[in-house]
Length: 367
Ligand SMILES: *Cc1c(COP(=O)(O)O)cnc(C)c1O
Image 1 (tube, rainbow, N blue to C red):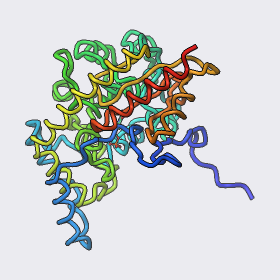
Image 2 (image 1 turned 45 degrees about the vertical axis):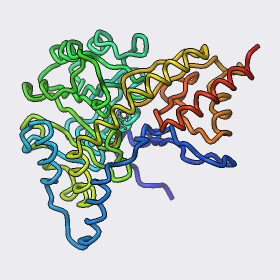
Image 3 (image 1 turned 90 degrees about the horizontal axis):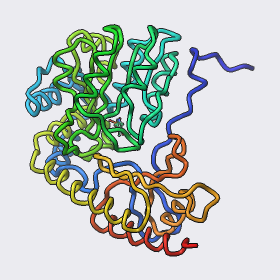
């Protein structure tokens, strides 16, 4: 018997594969494969989550008011323009679902986040990629691929897995080239980490346009990946569309309460950002010192470049070597980067072990 036929595009989806979390045989494991926060979540968020256990029988408040209030306070935004999601992934999918007609195009850069082609295909749209320059999205290349069918342009800023970013001027130049019928989605999952004067997460552009959405997550610097909390800042028209189509209770109460507490604990967030800045610089400097090429980026991870297989010093060889020491990192061949590994900033102990392991790997593979 044949299986029922899904809508066009669905069977072309390569399912998303998350970072590994087990290192068989290793005595201790350091997960540096999913850009999670090495400091965990704020104790205040953990306490709020625990308290929520007392009322598990009650449906959530449907608009995520508690969470939207906390976001609005922190950034000075109108809470009516904020739409929350079960992770920002849900919001990326929702945007594609709401704006793509079958055969429309969804544009993003060559090494863009892999959720974008999935969201596009799930909405029966066609993913289109634009080449990058030095592992950085090229606004010129994106503009060159705009067509009357381009319905959405996704830009992860900074991008995962490259860690590179576009300046506010470049984002504005891209926006200026779009038709008013094209939605620009600025996926700012790593915005809190960025310390660059020419970077903006997109709040200003959303506030002054009808076709720009910025998405954010509590999975990274806030350390709440397990809870699935994301939010989008939208123009009124887009917020209204997303609110019609999202699940009526799409963010659970434990997630809303823990998320709001995490957002309000700004001292904890600052400590997490300071930890990241210090150890990102350490990893970039030390890995370069070993003679490996590293793209440090501005997020909470580095991209380390190895030699093409079958060299002894290939990315798969390094991956296996690190895995034996319990250091789990991310292969990014599925991003078109078969010779690189993405490594998240970890605890001090994990970062030092990682550098020591790479040093041994380099020594053992010297020709
Ligand atoms: C981690 C990440 C997200 C966040 O996803 P959640 O569903 O909120 O956990 C979004 N975009 C990019 C580029 C990411 O790397």
